[in-house]
Image (cartoon, rainbow, N blue to C red; front, side, top):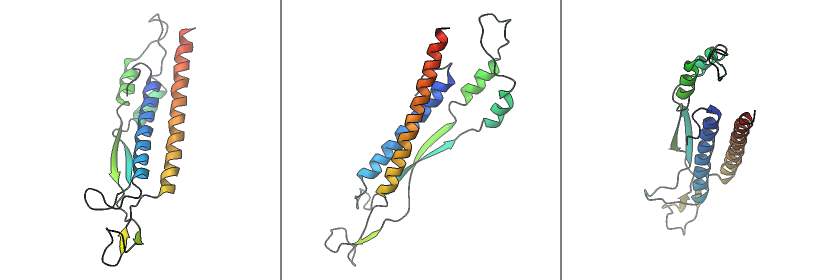
Length: 166
């Protein structure tokens, strides 16, 4: 989700909101399928997790340039010298996070239910590896992170609005 080109705070918050929304959707799917002992492939449901990776580490570059290139834009070009390199570096940081979904390969519990249609010859049924308590803790963490990103977005929006009133 891209909101503002000139305001990197908007894009950072939007990326955080998007990632937390994906995480909450996966958690909801895990909770919905917690009791599924047989899926389309004949196996119990496997817990899905969201993996976030950073495609390119620009932190050392940004750290080196943070002391020398952050400048203010002015109406007169002779007041403060602006550098186009900062905008280029900020644009490069927008696409640095990649997300992917992976399945947790741990085995679920074996429960003795001899009358269940999916029971093995000893009467045990392999359950899903979803733990509702873990999912709820992850849901609370994702919800809090979503709220924090929303607060940061609203603060950035308020700062941009206040700067127009100066």
